[in-house]
Length: 559
Image 1 (tube, rainbow, N blue to C red):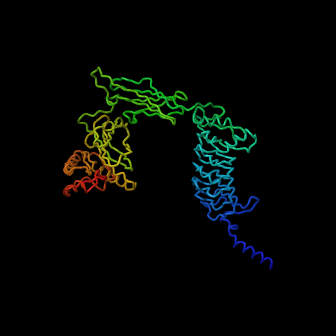
Image 2: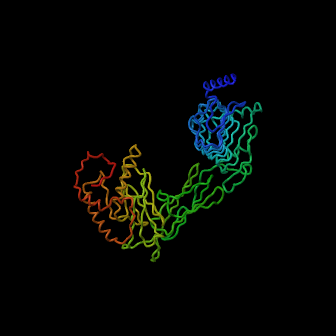
Image 3: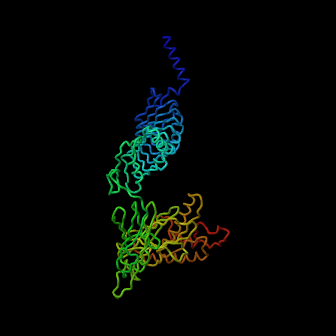
């Protein structure tokens, strides 16, 4: 009995002196074997890396424990760690310093997680790493220098990911490949290097040419776990193996047109054709007056693996449709364009030609009501309501530009669309935007004038400033008879003009009695135009001094 108490006493003293060698995280098991101490955590809902892991573990296995990230210094206190298995968790984020302090790590397994990218420079902290298992993740990019900090790696598994295009330089720049290539020629015997790259959605176009050639040339000591890599696209090469295809060198687009000068009568339908050769396939856009065409029907047809045709249909030519149309083709190498001039010939008949859009007589009861529906830091979104005789065929024109600019940009909008976004606005600038029937000049009530705020560094303040100004301007200009938001650049006549326009607004509203307009300006229910006019009548004119407000003002004021 005395011997038992002596042994118990010795064990207790040993526990108190070296607690780190005996404690084990809750819900996990700790063992000792010929490789050292091991920590095993399986199917527990810990959700994060335990903070009390003893420093003497050489192997840690945490699987099915709902881990979502590897934060900085996750295992930095376990300097002796050699094997780290974190399979079948839900890891989506890996900090660039997550492997800090693991200079002795030789094996890292992250199979079955949700990683979309890996901070490859994190492996600077693991110079002895030999095995890296990343299969069954969601990696879609492998940077050119991804393997730069893995000089000792002999097993790399990237199978069952979302890789579609990678460069052969990923492996050519691999230090292990460079040193081994020299050793193979001289000594003939080096350690095998195993690569697993199968079951990825490889896109077998010209961008994969170098990688396909590299895979074909692979021979021992580099060993592919599965050498039958298969294409997922394009359609012409889907389900074919790498050794069955021949890929061409990439080529920048070359755009051409069968006809570069077209003359058609007024009211005719015009079809513009653009022919583009490129590898890989290009994106094609049509430009008119330096603006991307909106609403016109453009279709693309694949002629062969390198050639695409794009057709732009302009229905019912109007005088405003004549001019230079440009077909622009782009891929990752470069771009090309071709211009097509559209001319309209004089008509020899007195019969009226069909108009491009429903044309209204001078006394037609057309009505367009616009508002600013959304404001962002650098832009706005317009919405409009139009009462026309034939809405299914009504086209619109947006006139946009600086308020004092005599020439505004024009964008055509097709039927059925009632919103448009404007971005990249300049600070401290007065703009005007109008919505009209296609090719019609702006009329009263079809325009909004607004002023952007100062481009100050505090984003929150800038958002608030623009928000206030745009709301004020949208409120004032809600009336069809155009009113003006008085800015620091306004003159004293602003009050009289606002008052006159308020009266016109009342008359206009009486004329439109019965027309449904409910909900047009729901965001401005708290302040009506009647209240605005009333306030304007009650407030006396204030003498404005230039020194009272900064020059070029950054806010809108109502007097």
